[in-house]
Image (cartoon, rainbow, N blue to C red; front, side):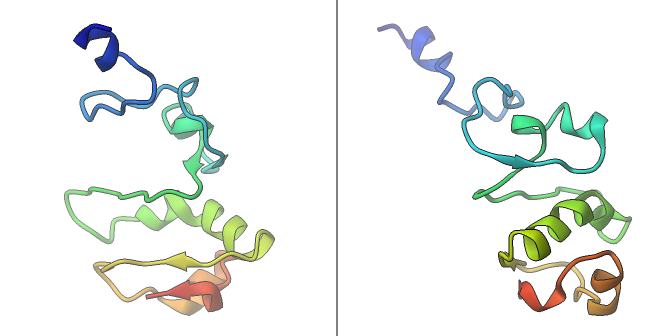
Amino acid sequence: MTITSLLDHPDLWRADRLYRAAAYRGTSIPSGFPILDRYLPGGGWPTGAVSELCLAQPGIGELQLLGSALAQITKNAGRWVLWLNPPFLPYAPGLTAAGIDAGRMLL
């Protein structure tokens, strides 16, 4: 086995390229935005994984990208969502208005 074949193995994630949907073996939840789903592994936000949004500045509507998935996770699947060091305190009435079960959030 050569170094090239190792580096091209589908189980090796390389930061300089996006996941290829064919190589992704997990499940995903659609984002609600078909164009974005084309670029996400498996056609949506990966489940059972950590997702990080890296933005130039926080508070510019990034939760709109996650709203549909968070609603599906908390209400339909009855699962919990963990927030690690969010830049702002999540606003429970706003989450509820978006269809997200704010009672299933851990900060």
